[in-house]
Image (tube, rainbow, N blue to C red; front, side):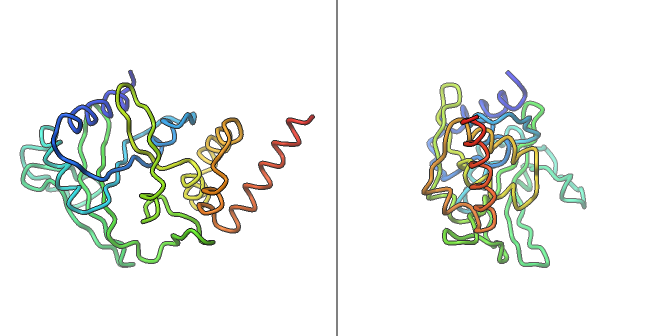
Length: 213
């Protein structure tokens, strides 16, 4: 198994053996790979619906926490410790998140709750569904991972987020999978912004013409 598979297996084992119930979902490249996309995950991103979920995961993952508090002034180099298992940060825009971060089996793992999106477009009627927003919870998709079943953000929603960020390699990988395996038409209409829906329709038409040829 790769490092990310070993790390995710460890997380799933710890969570499944606990009596804690947390609303969580996998996002980012890990979620894409678990849905069949060809990508190389660099870390594991796990979102929780409520801020309390970060604290609950911090307790479950305490064995991976630093023994002493991380004194790094740069939060990008910060890791959870027993003294400070999580922190909340608010940016000038008002964007606010609470997160914990660990190194597990050589993989960086982040557990995040976003409590204030600061106006990032997120809707089901034109603006598109944001992968870190409130609408992902109503569209969570369960996929098999080894002996576990894990919740992921669907590719239809991930496509919108990657189009916004202009991440071509990920866009291509997701589109390839949707072209081969099909997609949820109702969800794609909600997930994509108007402009991105036009792109999607055009790409699917190109694929249809290619198949006919």
